Length: 226
Image (cartoon, rainbow, N blue to C red; front, side, top):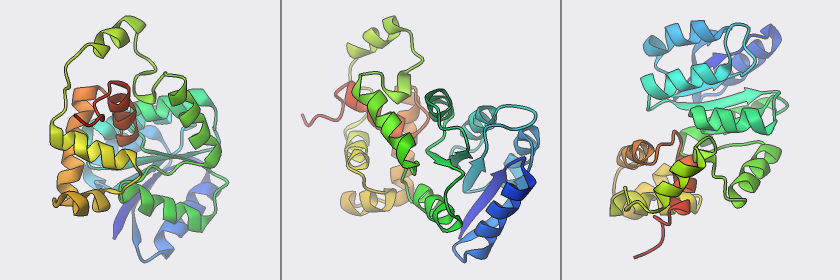
């Protein structure tokens, strides 16, 4: 059962999300809070598997909650669920550590499916958001480093491969759309080990999500077969 925490300030929306999560046998609701500071205070004790967070919170921006979760609970998967589908908020959220980005017009059933997909190693995004991220990657300004100075970006190009052969194998399969479980089965390792390999590459590639790690590794040609 996937443990879910919700950070949402609107009462009606908060109730709808909570009911959707509570009514499905595959998910359980651990905490519901309305402000970013409440979330930061309660996250360490709640220890959810998945954090659903709005961006337009009444006290702080949702990306601050995402950054805290990425540091304090690296095994927690974060999904933004918001009305903001603009490029600035999308890229800022992914940079902060979100692995999913869904707009609030999704159905309750889709919300639960997105939570389960996220926990299985996917990166659920609303169609318009996914197109935006892909277009951004195609023009050579990868999600994982869009805030980097151009000088640092060029310096990285000449660096030696910072990931191990096994980490590169994991990233190759994730880049092809396999979930952590499917990667584990193909490589003969556990899903937990897959997650550990992916998270180690976060630090090496200076990113915060699997999607950003794949984009960064591809840019540096680390996914090319020797």
